[in-house]
Image (tube, rainbow, N blue to C red; front, top):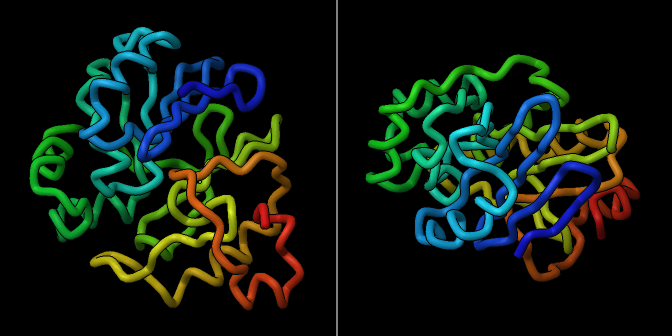
Length: 208
């Protein structure tokens, strides 16, 4: 259930993927779905002592990406400024789960800067208004959350805080970045290539 992506970067494969970066800071990207809590404790603890995690970054605040935030008691938490605002204003609509909304509102979640440790923050509204991708430039790894997946799939844009009109722009913005490894929020089965991706000749860029 644990896969090594590149040196010191690991993926915990669950219903929602969790990534661990063991670098100058110990960083978790997304904390998975609470229904997978037992597996998170079992497998992720093989990589890191939860109390030693320095930073937790959320690509967005849906419950299946934030469901185990309370395992990391000593970490600093980050999400985009828009995601933090939506948590306060929209509440359950931004998280899609009442229990996880309550947990997140008890945590201080700081707005992401443009760069945090080794990660460049790229705003990618679409799946949610506050979605971000994270680029580890040295190793050319893109953590794409639910914006774009392997196997011809784009993130849903029919949810309470989605911005469907922004998705194409966000995907085209990602093209300008140099990445080799695409690390999405979920591992999904293949679907047809979206027409605008095919028209722009970007199939290989997004793992099609």
